[in-house]
Image (tube, rainbow, N blue to C red):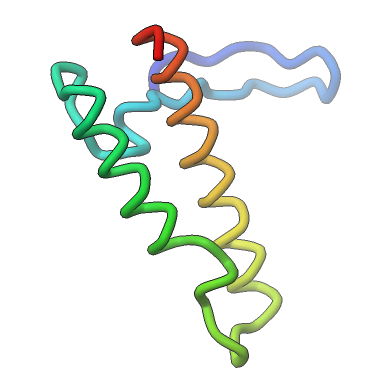
Length: 82
């Protein structure tokens, strides 16, 4: 986590998540390395890969994690100009 900011919509502090931390890569990593890690994490955490016996709580957690991974990747893409 990097910073906290005030969200006036819901009246609470929100933390900005470091996209490199979410993906588990260094800021010096090449874009190819970042993309590879993104794909690996996407497959690992995507709710479609949980299986038929997954509870609604597990699906919700996987959905949230997948969203975090996607957002982190998109942030890095913008920062690196990809």
